[in-house]
Length: 168
Image (cartoon, rainbow, N blue to C red; front, side, top):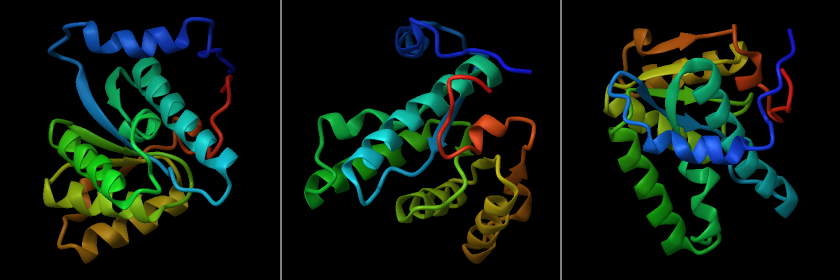
């Protein structure tokens, strides 16, 4: 079944999620790649993070947060001090999340750091790609985490796709 989620007001809906006071809605931290060799791919990864946020909101009913979808607009990832600040902010934001969603089909260095932090915080980790799930489990176990922290969800293939589409 295909469903269009990127309608005209998709960015507004994504931004307005933070104004709805729904104490029942779980908070999710979106873990997906940002770094890329080409500037165009880097920008696309920012856009993909926003797409994962929207999908998590619309289909999984999470209050989704992907700081790497927006912070690179105001902080330069190539400046080590600003990159450190952005990473610290993201990891702090993870503390206020109920679950970590590992999106896409490959791990970046930054994602590995986020997964290690999720283990330290004892956060539930949901992975949407089967091969990636094995890699995440190795990281979790290698950092003294419990195997049960990681779960595989194959029912949302859009969250595993490295280039989220307008339709899924």
